[in-house]
Length: 245
Image (cartoon, rainbow, N blue to C red; front, top):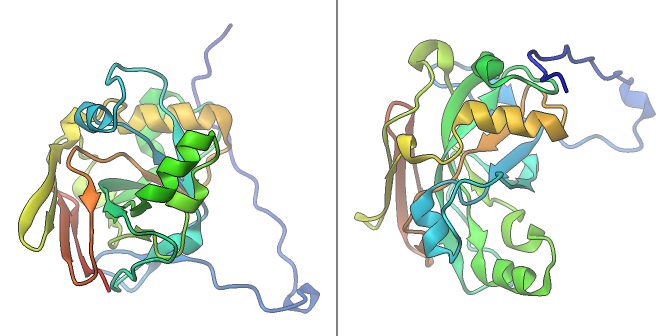
């Protein structure tokens, strides 16, 4: 079977006059673009699971390279420039620091060699997780939405364009809680590299400009409490700071 080598051009969905909506639509979620007053409109949010070997081990899984798996958050889960409100119905919220990939174009069956061409830029994100609810869902064989896709569960920094920083494939990924290092890894430890993630996802979805990909978290995930101060960074990309309230 012939392997796909390129990406397809996306079509623009039709726009309808405001009068056709039964109520005013929710404003489109967006991220600031570093150093400008422009905004990056967010379409979808994909997250890759267990993409660092040490994190796979700490979660009780085999770190061998197998097909990646993804789960979703909603664009409305993004939290920008604000503190993280401790969510309801949980007593075990965990931090997961990640580099976030922001796509400026997309398509289907994107070749690995062409994947970087789709990237607009990068950001620093936290995949906040109601671990107790996620564990219950795993045990019952149910989706993870209650544990992963809740309000404010995706704090994110401004996007830094790839035109300014290139495509980082090495560099420290770090999270401190109250000044103490909790998570520390390196982008060169990613099991599935960013171009491979994009290529794999594009086999199953038509990726679009505005899509975000949370690229995975290093070992050291753990609980947060109200009053904690989180300081995260990805070398060459940026930083993210917030308090748990």
